[in-house]
Length: 105
Image (tube, rainbow, N blue to C red; front, side, top):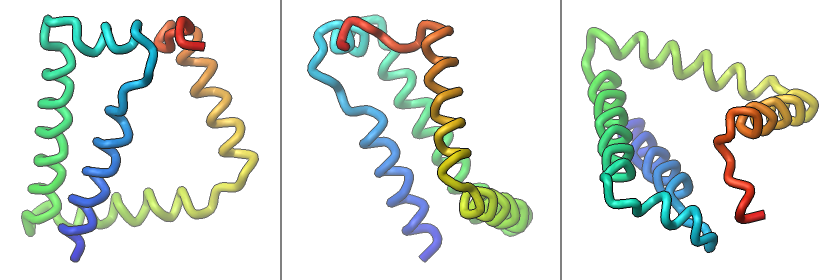
């Protein structure tokens, strides 16, 4: 059951993180021909496979379950104020670093 939920969660994250917007600038960046988008997808898949394998190996399974419980406990005890502050800091950091294209806005 844990393996199935991990695969389902990783697929949902993959699908939602790779949706292409209607902006032609973003579309051109994703399909620029140098293979960077394909490299990112391959890196993502390899990372998910490593997490999947580490969660099934008996030697590292206890570390994985401990990290999973600590992460879910930390998320469950956060309130709306921390979500607002975190979202603001994330957006401000992305804007300062130039990671967000303003052509689509």
